[in-house]
Image: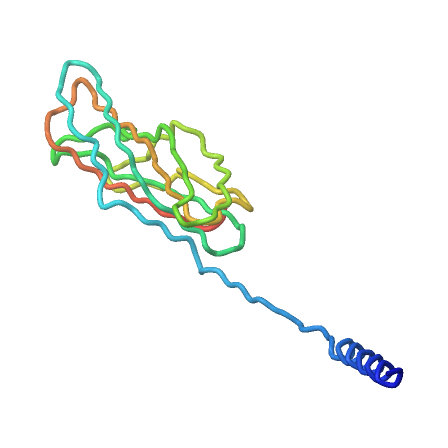
Length: 182
């Protein structure tokens, strides 16, 4: 019995030594790449509704909802710009400063985990307009190390119509773009 116990003890020690002898390190790596740029999704149109001339200056409101995606994984920041053609009904035009952004609501798009953007733009912000769209201005930005993910941005726009304005159906084209860097 002593011999069997001794053999069993030697076998257990041998197994324990074998388990330790087979331990080792396994190097692990993970390569993560991002997309090459910023993407922006725009609605097909923005409707301000209708006004009825009433003898005084009037204002109408509209919400411009866009989605900006920064899947680069760099934290380099981004900014979104806007410019506009002048509001016209074919023969009459509104003032070049007719449209402004009064504020913005921002939310992380469903299904994403986001790093909230740090926006330094102040509102109200006049949207530049002309017969041909003038130089764009920043309408929203994400500072360094912010704005990573997908963001639903809703810009609250105000359109001023003067008391001496002409009746008609007015149109304008806004040009919006997002680029890298705050």
